[in-house]
Image (cartoon, rainbow, N blue to C red):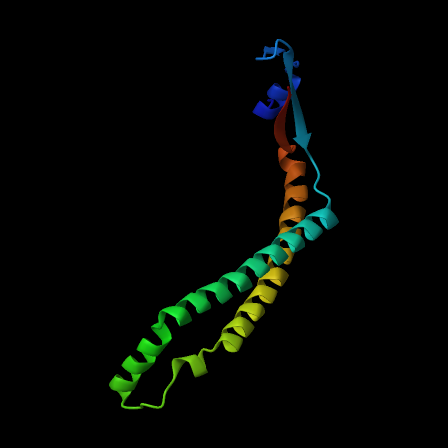
Length: 141
């Protein structure tokens, strides 16, 4: 019994008329192996970029909240509710504390994301033995 991927792989490349007068070739290839270290490096770089986005986004959100006066209003509300008029939300959740927390979360995301990328590459390489790989189609125009 043959799979759909094998049936598609057996088909010959057929020309399809394109807009430029030339023929378009279709090629079907199987992805049967993902290099482990390439997957680790790529996932590391992607998670580094996402970590930078997290830190910059945290900075921008904190600055917008500080400029709009949300922290002062929340401090005044907490002071009225608790009776403590000396409490300041910006001292507890100041910019250095918030950015430090975002940095710790970004570092943890890089570590966990890189490990998940490595695990995904290993699992794909193991599953190829059972499934035969992923059939990918390309066209040449």
